[in-house]
Amino acid sequence: MQPFRFASPTDQVVCTFCAKHLGSDKSERRDRDHLELWLDLHAELQDAHARAVSEARATSARTEATISELRTEVAQLTEAIADDFENAPAGIRDALGSEVLTRSERRTELLYRRLDRLMAAIWRIDALHHDADNPGLCSCGTAVASCPEGRAIDGERQELRAWEAKNLQLLRDGARHALPSEHPANPST
Image (cartoon, rainbow, N blue to C red):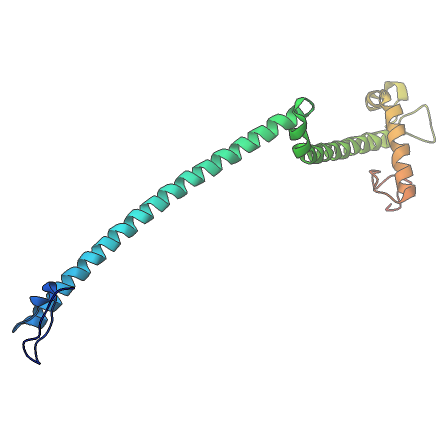
């Protein structure tokens, strides 16, 4: 506190900063000083804000780069472990087991469907080159032994019959089967 003493009933106590506001143009000086003070405060706040924004952007960029690197690393590790799952440590096998199992099941399902499509195509070729009324002749009119398509299928006939029997059983059980639509047992014909 600054010491003061009233000399008259109209005396005023004024701080040293505000003392210069007293006088004929006191309001103009006061406004000018306050405006300078506010401009200085505003400039300081703008600088602080600009520094904070710059730091936030730099932090965000570093964070995004780290996240991207970690995602890439996780994908590479997952792929590496999935390829050699049996030799991975037990904890990693437990963590990735379901993913590896899902991938394997999906690959197996796709391979079975591809096999079914191929076997259905072989069945169609066999059906086209098989004359039930003349067992010694192919439906193309040549002897079975000299028909090139028949000879190509000969090595796969046993596998073809096993595939056909399995799919006939699936059809009887009401399950999804791979018999072609023109198969005589298929109800869609």
